[in-house]
Image (cartoon, rainbow, N blue to C red; front, side, top):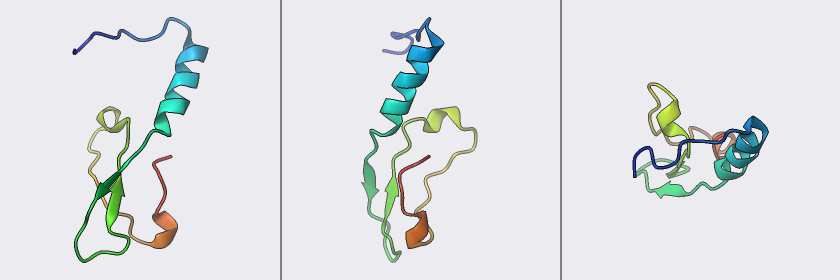
Length: 66
């Protein structure tokens, strides 16, 4: 399916779509011996060079990707 969707011609519509999809996250479970013990999936991970899944380090960091 690579290159099946070529994007939006309307940039406003694309931004609206990206903002909506960004909230469609799940939690990868589980990281042993760590609290909290999960990692949020980042829908746009492939657009971030060097991105690595990393468990939240504190309860304050425990939220979906921004």
